[in-house]
Every structure is written in structure tokens, then in C-alpha cells.
Image (tube, rainbow, N blue to C red):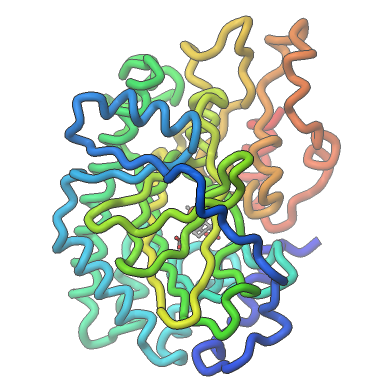
Length: 385
Ligand SMILES: C=C1C[C@]23C[C@H]1CC[C@H]2[C@@]12CCC[C@@](C)(C(=O)O1)[C@H]2[C@@H]3C(=O)O
Ligand SMILES: O=C(O)CCC(=O)C(=O)O
Ligand SMILES: [Fe+2]
């Protein structure tokens, strides 16, 4: 079975800027409209003395919230937005010089999850993991330093904010520094030392038939948390919220959106579930969003924090590193979380409590994931055993 990811990067829809009608290959069918009358996604001022409790409540009941007074200078956000605009504004042949390689993560192309859907998404993306230098040279051979400086500054600022948010979130769960160190098998001093993030720039051109097109299909992020900056004035992000269905998260001037990711769902033993979200498009305006996808340092295994596990709350997930999880997600998409099963030996007599784990145990243990190299395959199987 070829990796579905390989198919994703085969051909990229570069034609949509000039299309006057929505081609069949982009037609997802009428999208369900968000219910305008529902309560809005929580907005939390980080300077509020109750920020921790408010964050805890938002993580539990929404999996998403917007923050203000986050300390990221406006200039840093503006510079990043400007860089995104000039990147997507480059001629197609220039952007393709930095195309994401078939089995790679960084570079220009459709969203990684594209291959899981029969229809194309009305967007183009650019992913930066680690140093931006190589791609910067491909895009702007004579002027790559500026791009690198802006990306590096953004990475630094976002990394600090993400660490701060993680502490507030863990604090809201009643979890201390020490508890996290144990849960993540970290040897180094700070539990979030070495944590890093990928930057995802998303560009959604104006679309002739926005009611039938999809900017970015529904997904949860494979992260601890995601910090999203949306360009001002144009809505597009929607989150799925219980019976309310799809709820719009309009850009808030000076605000940033925080999503709970799958790894935080694991760390919190299901108390803070990751949020399903998607991006819709718009007839007249181009929209840009910039996601900082934050995860643990390489080699760090994430598992439910022991303090949150007891007889009433058995572990729902087993330990997994970020790269293992990304590989599982790349193959199994929204089944990935249910495959990170706990080591059941310890809760043999707790069988009925494990019923919520979807049992896809058979296939994953026998299937030979061809796209995964042998070494990491062994690690994944060990993590799932
Ligand atoms: C660190 C990450 C997280 C990735 C994969 C890798 C780099 C790119 C990220 C995204 C960004 C766009 C949505 C998503 C669903 C996608 O297609 O690519 C994300 C995916 C995930 O959260 O699973
Ligand atoms: O464009 C958006 O608002 C959503 C982007 C997103 O979900 C992502 O990059 O993971
Ligand atoms: Fe996302």
C-alpha cells in the first residue's frame, strides 16, 4: 500500500487564482452553515487574575479559546503576515522550487491531509519545520536573509508563549513541574526544554463558490497546542462545538487563537480533548492564517500525567513521541489517537473502562506501514504494544 502522504504532493492545484467557476474536483457539496446564535468561543485576557481557571474551563468545554495581552509584539505578527503574503504572491514556478518533498514535512504544497479526501482544498500551504534557510534560498536566492530573520523571530516568540500557555494549562489541571517531568520522561531541567514548533502558513484565495468549497478540511492538530494568527477582517476558521455544530472563530484584533491538540489530550488523559476545526473560504477576500504547531522535543514520550490517572480514571493512552505520532497520523488520520492505546497489562481488571478505545488493534499490529522506515516502525509498534 503506498503511503497516502505520497499521493498528496503529486499534483498541486495552482490554477485556482484564475478560476471563474468551481471545478468538480473542488466541489465538496453544500457546507452546513455555522449556527449564528451560539455562544462565542471564549476570549481570555492573559493578564486576568483568573486566567488559569478560565483557560481550564475553555480547554475542557471548547478545546479552543482566543487570547489577548499575550505579549507578542504587533510588529512580529505584522512582519510574519507580510512575509506570508509575499511568499504566496510569488510566481507558481518559484514557489514550486520549494515544493514539499514527497515524504517530507517542510515546504510548499497542499495540506498534508489532502490525500485523505477525494476533493481538493481551496488553499495552498507552506510548512517550516526547523531552519527556514534551505527554502528561503530556493524562494529568494538574492534576498533570503530577511525571510529567515522574520521566521526565526516568530519561532522564538511563539515558543515562549506556547511554553507559558502550557504551564497555565497544566496548572489548571492541578499538575506541577515535577509531575510533567515524570510524565514526559524528560531528563533535562525544564519539562518544555527542547519543545519546538512547526510554522504552517495557509493561503485561501477568494473563491467563486464558497458555499461548496473547502479551505482546509476538518481535522484536529497533532500537537500539544496550536497558536493561530488569522489575518484581520476575514473570517474562515470554524470549530466543532457539541450540538451547536460549526462555530465561526472571527479574527480578533490583537488576539490569537489557541487550539488543544491531540498530544494535550493524551497528556491530560482525555480531560482536555483536541478540537475539530476547519477553514472555509470567501467570495471576495483572500485570507491568510499562520499556525504555530507546538510539540515536545525529539525523543520525549508523551503519556497521561500519572497524577491524572487512578482507578476511576485509568490511562486512556500509551506513551508516544511527537514524530511517532505524526507518522501514525499520516497513515491513519483521525483514527490516530484511538491507536495510541495504553499498556493494558496494568489494567487487566479494568476492561470495561477501556471500552472507549476503538479496537483497531488487529490491523495496525499486522499491517506493514511501507512509508515508515524500519527503525521508526519498530518504535511505533513498541509504543503501541
Ligand atoms: C507538525 C505537524 C502538524 C501537521 C503535520 C506537521 C506539519 C504540518 C501540520 C499541518 C498544518 C495544516 C493542518 C494539518 C492537519 C496538516 O495537514 O499539516 C497539520 C498537521 C497535523 O496537525 O496533523
Ligand atoms: O486557517 C485556519 O484558520 C486554520 C488553519 C489550521 O487549522 C492549521 O493550520 O492547522
Ligand atoms: Fe489545524
